Length: 411
Ligand SMILES: *Cc1c(COP(=O)(O)O)cnc(C)c1O
Image (cartoon, rainbow, N blue to C red; front, side, top):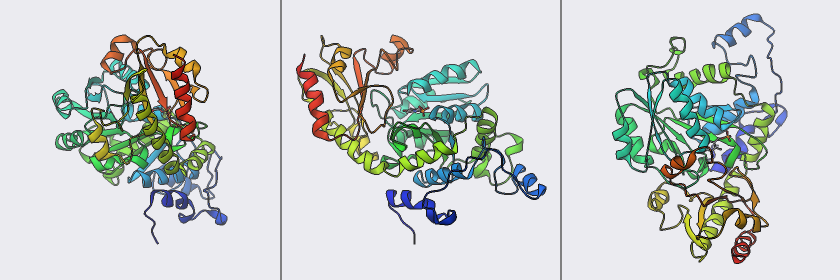
Protein backbone atom coordinates (compact mmCIF):
# COMPACT_ATOMS: atom_id res chain seq x y z
CA UNK A 1 0.00 0.00 0.00
CA UNK A 2 1.31 3.46 -0.80
CA UNK A 3 0.28 6.54 1.12
CA UNK A 4 -0.08 9.86 -0.62
CA UNK A 5 -0.81 12.43 2.09
CA UNK A 6 2.03 14.66 3.26
CA UNK A 7 1.74 13.84 6.96
CA UNK A 8 0.87 10.17 6.46
CA UNK A 9 4.05 9.68 4.46
CA UNK A 10 6.07 11.67 6.95
CA UNK A 11 5.03 9.70 10.03
CA UNK A 12 5.17 6.26 8.42
CA UNK A 13 8.18 6.44 6.12
CA UNK A 14 10.75 5.34 8.73
CA UNK A 15 9.06 2.08 9.68
CA UNK A 16 7.98 1.31 6.12
CA UNK A 17 11.63 1.53 5.06
CA UNK A 18 12.23 -1.33 7.50
CA UNK A 19 13.98 -0.28 10.69
CA UNK A 20 15.42 -2.85 13.09
CA UNK A 21 13.52 -4.46 15.96
CA UNK A 22 10.21 -3.02 14.84
CA UNK A 23 11.23 0.49 15.89
CA UNK A 24 8.86 3.06 14.39
CA UNK A 25 11.55 5.76 14.45
CA UNK A 26 14.83 5.28 12.66
CA UNK A 27 17.46 4.65 15.36
CA UNK A 28 20.23 7.14 16.12
CA UNK A 29 23.58 5.85 14.94
CA UNK A 30 26.19 7.86 16.81
CA UNK A 31 29.19 5.92 15.54
CA UNK A 32 31.77 8.00 13.69
CA UNK A 33 33.68 5.14 11.97
CA UNK A 34 32.06 2.14 10.28
CA UNK A 35 33.92 -1.19 10.35
CA UNK A 36 33.65 -4.17 7.99
CA UNK A 37 34.53 -7.82 8.63
CA UNK A 38 36.00 -8.14 5.12
CA UNK A 39 38.50 -5.47 4.09
CA UNK A 40 37.19 -5.67 0.53
CA UNK A 41 33.80 -4.36 1.74
CA UNK A 42 35.49 -1.27 3.19
CA UNK A 43 37.36 -0.81 -0.09
CA UNK A 44 34.11 -1.11 -2.07
CA UNK A 45 32.37 1.44 0.16
CA UNK A 46 35.26 3.87 -0.33
CA UNK A 47 35.15 3.38 -4.09
CA UNK A 48 31.38 3.79 -4.24
CA UNK A 49 30.89 0.25 -5.56
CA UNK A 50 28.88 -0.81 -2.52
CA UNK A 51 26.33 1.04 -0.39
CA UNK A 52 27.59 1.69 3.12
CA UNK A 53 29.15 4.19 5.46
CA UNK A 54 32.78 4.89 6.25
CA UNK A 55 32.96 8.04 8.34
CA UNK A 56 30.15 10.19 9.80
CA UNK A 57 31.35 13.41 8.14
CA UNK A 58 29.91 12.02 4.87
CA UNK A 59 27.04 9.77 5.93
CA UNK A 60 25.42 7.72 8.67
CA UNK A 61 22.32 5.49 8.56
CA UNK A 62 20.39 8.13 10.56
CA UNK A 63 21.30 10.87 8.09
CA UNK A 64 20.25 8.57 5.25
CA UNK A 65 16.81 8.15 6.78
CA UNK A 66 16.40 11.92 7.07
CA UNK A 67 17.67 12.41 3.52
CA UNK A 68 15.17 9.90 2.17
CA UNK A 69 12.39 11.61 4.09
CA UNK A 70 13.27 15.04 2.70
CA UNK A 71 13.68 13.68 -0.84
CA UNK A 72 10.18 12.22 -0.52
CA UNK A 73 8.71 15.53 0.64
CA UNK A 74 10.58 17.49 -2.04
CA UNK A 75 9.59 14.96 -4.72
CA UNK A 76 13.31 14.62 -5.46
CA UNK A 77 15.63 11.83 -6.51
CA UNK A 78 18.23 12.48 -3.81
CA UNK A 79 19.06 14.73 -0.90
CA UNK A 80 22.01 15.71 1.28
CA UNK A 81 21.75 17.10 4.78
CA UNK A 82 24.15 19.55 6.42
CA UNK A 83 24.83 21.01 9.85
CA UNK A 84 23.01 24.27 8.98
CA UNK A 85 21.11 25.85 6.13
CA UNK A 86 24.11 28.07 5.39
CA UNK A 87 26.39 25.01 5.08
CA UNK A 88 23.94 23.68 2.47
CA UNK A 89 23.82 26.99 0.57
CA UNK A 90 27.58 27.51 0.78
CA UNK A 91 28.13 24.01 -0.58
CA UNK A 92 25.89 24.62 -3.60
CA UNK A 93 27.86 27.72 -4.60
CA UNK A 94 31.38 26.60 -3.73
CA UNK A 95 31.17 23.12 -5.22
CA UNK A 96 29.19 23.84 -8.40
CA UNK A 97 30.67 27.22 -9.42
CA UNK A 98 34.25 28.20 -10.14
CA UNK A 99 36.24 31.34 -10.94
CA UNK A 100 35.02 32.94 -14.18
CA UNK A 101 31.41 31.78 -13.68
CA UNK A 102 28.44 34.08 -13.21
CA UNK A 103 25.38 33.68 -11.05
CA UNK A 104 22.16 35.70 -11.16
CA UNK A 105 20.31 35.95 -7.88
CA UNK A 106 17.27 37.64 -6.50
CA UNK A 107 18.07 40.89 -4.74
CA UNK A 108 15.58 39.92 -2.04
CA UNK A 109 17.56 37.47 0.05
CA UNK A 110 18.21 36.08 3.48
CA UNK A 111 20.96 38.34 4.91
CA UNK A 112 23.66 35.67 5.23
CA UNK A 113 23.06 34.50 1.67
CA UNK A 114 23.61 38.09 0.51
CA UNK A 115 26.77 38.10 2.56
CA UNK A 116 28.08 34.86 1.01
CA UNK A 117 27.77 36.48 -2.45
CA UNK A 118 30.38 39.00 -1.27
CA UNK A 119 32.68 36.07 -0.52
CA UNK A 120 32.05 34.53 -3.96
CA UNK A 121 33.09 37.76 -5.68
CA UNK A 122 36.46 37.48 -3.92
CA UNK A 123 36.87 34.01 -5.47
CA UNK A 124 36.31 35.33 -8.97
CA UNK A 125 32.67 34.34 -9.26
CA UNK A 126 30.58 37.16 -10.68
CA UNK A 127 27.23 37.85 -9.02
CA UNK A 128 24.38 39.96 -10.37
CA UNK A 129 21.51 40.74 -8.01
CA UNK A 130 18.24 41.65 -9.71
CA UNK A 131 14.60 42.33 -8.91
CA UNK A 132 13.57 38.74 -9.59
CA UNK A 133 9.85 39.47 -9.17
CA UNK A 134 10.30 40.14 -12.91
CA UNK A 135 11.46 37.35 -15.20
CA UNK A 136 12.62 40.03 -17.61
CA UNK A 137 15.14 41.39 -15.08
CA UNK A 138 16.62 37.91 -14.64
CA UNK A 139 16.72 37.29 -18.40
CA UNK A 140 18.51 40.60 -19.01
CA UNK A 141 21.16 39.77 -16.41
CA UNK A 142 22.08 36.42 -17.99
CA UNK A 143 25.35 36.33 -19.94
CA UNK A 144 27.46 33.73 -21.71
CA UNK A 145 29.19 32.58 -18.49
CA UNK A 146 26.01 32.38 -16.38
CA UNK A 147 25.70 28.96 -14.74
CA UNK A 148 23.09 29.34 -12.04
CA UNK A 149 20.05 31.32 -10.86
CA UNK A 150 19.31 31.51 -7.13
CA UNK A 151 16.02 32.69 -5.61
CA UNK A 152 13.95 32.33 -2.45
CA UNK A 153 10.23 31.56 -2.44
CA UNK A 154 8.95 34.20 -0.02
CA UNK A 155 11.71 36.74 0.59
CA UNK A 156 12.73 37.64 4.07
CA UNK A 157 11.83 40.19 5.49
CA UNK A 158 9.75 42.14 2.94
CA UNK A 159 7.90 39.05 1.57
CA UNK A 160 8.47 39.70 -2.16
CA UNK A 161 7.61 36.67 -4.29
CA UNK A 162 9.83 36.24 -7.32
CA UNK A 163 8.55 35.01 -10.67
CA UNK A 164 9.17 31.37 -9.79
CA UNK A 165 7.43 30.00 -12.89
CA UNK A 166 8.96 32.45 -15.39
CA UNK A 167 12.48 31.98 -14.03
CA UNK A 168 12.00 28.21 -14.21
CA UNK A 169 11.15 28.49 -17.91
CA UNK A 170 14.13 30.75 -18.50
CA UNK A 171 16.55 28.36 -16.76
CA UNK A 172 15.17 25.45 -18.74
CA UNK A 173 15.61 27.40 -21.97
CA UNK A 174 19.18 28.49 -21.16
CA UNK A 175 20.29 25.25 -19.46
CA UNK A 176 20.99 26.97 -16.11
CA UNK A 177 20.97 25.35 -12.68
CA UNK A 178 17.86 26.73 -10.96
CA UNK A 179 18.28 26.81 -7.17
CA UNK A 180 15.25 27.61 -5.02
CA UNK A 181 15.54 28.27 -1.29
CA UNK A 182 12.23 26.85 -0.04
CA UNK A 183 12.79 27.60 3.66
CA UNK A 184 9.94 30.08 4.13
CA UNK A 185 7.35 27.98 2.36
CA UNK A 186 8.68 24.48 3.24
CA UNK A 187 7.76 21.44 1.22
CA UNK A 188 4.33 21.58 2.85
CA UNK A 189 3.33 24.87 1.20
CA UNK A 190 5.26 24.57 -2.05
CA UNK A 191 7.17 22.12 -4.24
CA UNK A 192 9.91 23.97 -6.18
CA UNK A 193 10.05 21.03 -8.59
CA UNK A 194 6.65 22.17 -9.88
CA UNK A 195 8.30 25.31 -11.31
CA UNK A 196 11.31 23.48 -12.71
CA UNK A 197 13.82 23.87 -9.86
CA UNK A 198 17.01 21.84 -10.27
CA UNK A 199 17.98 22.04 -6.59
CA UNK A 200 15.86 22.79 -3.54
CA UNK A 201 17.66 24.18 -0.51
CA UNK A 202 16.01 24.32 2.89
CA UNK A 203 17.08 25.50 6.31
CA UNK A 204 15.77 22.64 8.41
CA UNK A 205 16.28 24.87 11.46
CA UNK A 206 13.08 26.72 10.60
CA UNK A 207 9.65 25.22 9.77
CA UNK A 208 11.00 21.74 9.13
CA UNK A 209 12.27 21.13 12.67
CA UNK A 210 9.98 23.82 14.03
CA UNK A 211 10.92 23.85 17.68
CA UNK A 212 13.94 26.14 17.67
CA UNK A 213 16.12 23.43 19.21
CA UNK A 214 18.10 22.08 16.27
CA UNK A 215 20.05 23.46 13.30
CA UNK A 216 20.18 21.74 9.92
CA UNK A 217 20.08 22.27 6.18
CA UNK A 218 19.35 20.25 3.07
CA UNK A 219 19.86 20.22 -0.68
CA UNK A 220 17.51 18.07 -2.77
CA UNK A 221 18.09 17.29 -6.42
CA UNK A 222 14.76 17.18 -8.26
CA UNK A 223 16.29 15.21 -11.13
CA UNK A 224 15.28 17.86 -13.68
CA UNK A 225 18.78 19.14 -14.45
CA UNK A 226 21.02 17.29 -16.87
CA UNK A 227 24.40 17.19 -15.11
CA UNK A 228 26.03 15.48 -18.09
CA UNK A 229 25.84 18.92 -19.77
CA UNK A 230 27.34 20.80 -16.82
CA UNK A 231 31.00 21.74 -17.37
CA UNK A 232 31.94 22.04 -13.68
CA UNK A 233 31.59 18.38 -12.76
CA UNK A 234 35.06 17.09 -11.91
CA UNK A 235 36.34 14.18 -13.96
CA UNK A 236 36.30 11.80 -10.98
CA UNK A 237 32.54 12.30 -10.53
CA UNK A 238 31.65 11.80 -14.20
CA UNK A 239 30.78 8.15 -13.77
CA UNK A 240 27.61 6.24 -13.03
CA UNK A 241 24.14 7.74 -13.46
CA UNK A 242 24.53 11.41 -14.59
CA UNK A 243 21.46 12.30 -12.51
CA UNK A 244 23.63 11.73 -9.41
CA UNK A 245 26.66 13.70 -10.56
CA UNK A 246 25.63 17.00 -9.00
CA UNK A 247 24.72 15.56 -5.61
CA UNK A 248 27.82 13.34 -5.57
CA UNK A 249 30.06 16.32 -6.20
CA UNK A 250 28.33 18.28 -3.41
CA UNK A 251 28.75 15.30 -1.09
CA UNK A 252 32.45 14.89 -1.83
CA UNK A 253 33.48 18.51 -2.16
CA UNK A 254 31.00 19.95 0.32
CA UNK A 255 30.41 17.43 3.09
CA UNK A 256 33.65 15.49 2.88
CA UNK A 257 36.06 18.37 2.17
CA UNK A 258 34.39 21.34 3.90
CA UNK A 259 32.87 19.19 6.64
CA UNK A 260 29.56 20.94 7.32
CA UNK A 261 28.06 17.67 8.55
CA UNK A 262 24.89 17.23 10.57
CA UNK A 263 25.12 14.95 13.62
CA UNK A 264 22.89 11.88 13.81
CA UNK A 265 21.55 13.06 17.16
CA UNK A 266 20.39 16.32 15.60
CA UNK A 267 19.06 14.55 12.51
CA UNK A 268 16.80 12.57 14.81
CA UNK A 269 15.53 15.74 16.52
CA UNK A 270 14.79 17.35 13.15
CA UNK A 271 13.02 14.22 12.00
CA UNK A 272 10.83 14.22 15.11
CA UNK A 273 10.05 17.89 14.72
CA UNK A 274 9.08 17.45 11.08
CA UNK A 275 6.29 15.02 11.91
CA UNK A 276 4.02 17.92 12.89
CA UNK A 277 5.12 20.28 10.11
CA UNK A 278 1.73 20.33 8.39
CA UNK A 279 -0.16 20.80 11.66
CA UNK A 280 2.12 23.58 12.82
CA UNK A 281 2.11 25.38 9.50
CA UNK A 282 -1.66 25.26 9.19
CA UNK A 283 -1.92 27.01 12.54
CA UNK A 284 0.97 29.42 11.91
CA UNK A 285 -0.37 30.49 8.52
CA UNK A 286 -3.91 30.99 9.91
CA UNK A 287 -2.51 33.04 12.80
CA UNK A 288 -0.40 35.10 10.38
CA UNK A 289 -3.38 35.82 8.12
CA UNK A 290 -5.52 36.95 11.09
CA UNK A 291 -2.73 39.14 12.50
CA UNK A 292 -1.87 40.65 9.10
CA UNK A 293 -5.51 41.65 8.59
CA UNK A 294 -5.72 43.14 12.08
CA UNK A 295 -2.49 45.14 11.62
CA UNK A 296 -3.48 46.24 8.12
CA UNK A 297 -6.68 47.80 9.49
CA UNK A 298 -4.96 49.40 12.51
CA UNK A 299 -4.49 53.21 12.47
CA UNK A 300 -1.05 52.98 14.11
CA UNK A 301 0.33 50.68 11.44
CA UNK A 302 1.57 52.36 8.24
CA UNK A 303 2.25 49.28 6.10
CA UNK A 304 1.98 45.51 6.33
CA UNK A 305 4.07 43.13 4.20
CA UNK A 306 2.23 39.80 3.93
CA UNK A 307 1.42 37.85 0.74
CA UNK A 308 -1.99 36.88 2.10
CA UNK A 309 -3.25 40.48 1.85
CA UNK A 310 -4.99 41.31 -1.41
CA UNK A 311 -2.94 44.53 -1.54
CA UNK A 312 0.39 42.63 -1.63
CA UNK A 313 2.01 43.18 -5.06
CA UNK A 314 2.39 39.42 -5.68
CA UNK A 315 -0.76 38.24 -3.90
CA UNK A 316 -2.12 36.46 -7.00
CA UNK A 317 1.17 34.74 -7.66
CA UNK A 318 1.33 33.47 -4.07
CA UNK A 319 -2.27 32.32 -4.23
CA UNK A 320 -1.62 30.37 -7.38
CA UNK A 321 1.60 28.70 -6.20
CA UNK A 322 1.43 28.17 -2.43
CA UNK A 323 -0.95 26.15 -0.27
CA UNK A 324 -1.03 29.07 2.22
CA UNK A 325 0.69 32.45 2.41
CA UNK A 326 3.35 31.60 4.98
CA UNK A 327 3.83 32.79 8.53
CA UNK A 328 6.25 35.68 8.19
CA UNK A 329 4.83 39.19 8.54
CA UNK A 330 6.70 42.46 8.47
CA UNK A 331 5.20 45.87 9.18
CA UNK A 332 6.01 49.54 9.63
CA UNK A 333 4.46 51.55 12.42
CA UNK A 334 3.27 55.09 11.66
CA UNK A 335 5.87 57.87 12.02
CA UNK A 336 6.66 58.75 15.58
CA UNK A 337 6.36 55.28 17.13
CA UNK A 338 9.75 53.76 17.84
CA UNK A 339 9.87 50.07 16.90
CA UNK A 340 12.06 49.05 19.84
CA UNK A 341 9.74 50.86 22.26
CA UNK A 342 6.78 49.09 20.67
CA UNK A 343 8.41 45.66 20.93
CA UNK A 344 9.18 46.33 24.59
CA UNK A 345 5.44 46.58 25.20
CA UNK A 346 4.59 43.14 23.84
CA UNK A 347 4.33 40.41 26.45
CA UNK A 348 3.86 37.20 24.54
CA UNK A 349 6.06 38.01 21.55
CA UNK A 350 9.74 37.25 22.09
CA UNK A 351 12.43 39.73 20.99
CA UNK A 352 14.48 37.25 19.00
CA UNK A 353 15.84 36.44 15.60
CA UNK A 354 15.05 33.07 13.94
CA UNK A 355 11.82 32.05 12.24
CA UNK A 356 9.59 29.05 11.86
CA UNK A 357 9.53 28.56 15.62
CA UNK A 358 6.45 27.44 17.55
CA UNK A 359 6.67 30.75 19.44
CA UNK A 360 6.05 34.14 17.88
CA UNK A 361 9.33 36.04 17.52
CA UNK A 362 9.92 39.63 16.44
CA UNK A 363 12.77 42.06 15.89
CA UNK A 364 13.59 45.47 14.42
CA UNK A 365 15.09 44.51 11.04
CA UNK A 366 17.39 47.42 10.09
CA UNK A 367 19.10 47.45 13.48
CA UNK A 368 19.69 43.69 13.73
CA UNK A 369 19.65 41.09 10.93
CA UNK A 370 20.14 43.63 8.11
CA UNK A 371 22.40 46.03 10.05
CA UNK A 372 25.61 44.84 8.34
CA UNK A 373 24.03 45.33 4.90
CA UNK A 374 23.95 49.12 5.33
CA UNK A 375 21.34 51.67 4.28
CA UNK A 376 21.85 51.40 0.51
CA UNK A 377 21.61 47.62 0.58
CA UNK A 378 18.47 47.75 2.70
CA UNK A 379 16.85 50.24 0.36
CA UNK A 380 17.65 48.04 -2.66
CA UNK A 381 16.07 45.09 -0.84
CA UNK A 382 12.87 46.96 -0.03
CA UNK A 383 13.63 47.09 3.71
CA UNK A 384 12.45 50.20 5.53
CA UNK A 385 14.41 51.59 8.48
CA UNK A 386 11.42 51.11 10.80
CA UNK A 387 10.45 47.61 9.72
CA UNK A 388 9.48 45.04 12.35
CA UNK A 389 9.65 41.40 11.32
CA UNK A 390 7.49 38.78 13.00
CA UNK A 391 7.71 35.04 12.69
CA UNK A 392 4.30 33.83 13.74
CA UNK A 393 4.03 30.85 16.07
CA UNK A 394 1.36 28.34 17.00
CA UNK A 395 -0.09 30.25 19.96
CA UNK A 396 -3.85 30.61 20.23
CA UNK A 397 -4.91 33.29 17.83
CA UNK A 398 -6.82 35.37 20.42
CA UNK A 399 -3.75 35.61 22.67
CA UNK A 400 -1.55 36.63 19.79
CA UNK A 401 -3.88 39.30 18.44
CA UNK A 402 -4.63 40.76 21.85
CA UNK A 403 -0.92 41.05 22.64
CA UNK A 404 -0.33 43.17 19.52
CA UNK A 405 -3.52 45.15 20.24
CA UNK A 406 -2.55 46.00 23.81
CA UNK A 407 0.98 46.99 22.73
CA UNK A 408 -0.34 49.25 19.95
CA UNK A 409 -2.84 50.83 22.37
CA UNK A 410 0.05 52.18 24.47
CA UNK A 411 1.13 54.66 21.77
C1 LIG B 1 17.56 30.70 8.16
C2 LIG B 1 17.66 30.70 6.71
C3 LIG B 1 18.78 30.21 6.06
C4 LIG B 1 19.99 29.70 6.82
O1 LIG B 1 19.68 28.60 7.61
P1 LIG B 1 20.49 28.22 8.95
O2 LIG B 1 19.96 26.86 9.26
O3 LIG B 1 20.15 29.25 9.98
O4 LIG B 1 21.93 28.22 8.61
C5 LIG B 1 18.81 30.22 4.69
N1 LIG B 1 17.79 30.70 3.97
C6 LIG B 1 16.69 31.20 4.55
C7 LIG B 1 15.58 31.73 3.69
C8 LIG B 1 16.57 31.22 5.94
O5 LIG B 1 15.49 31.72 6.50
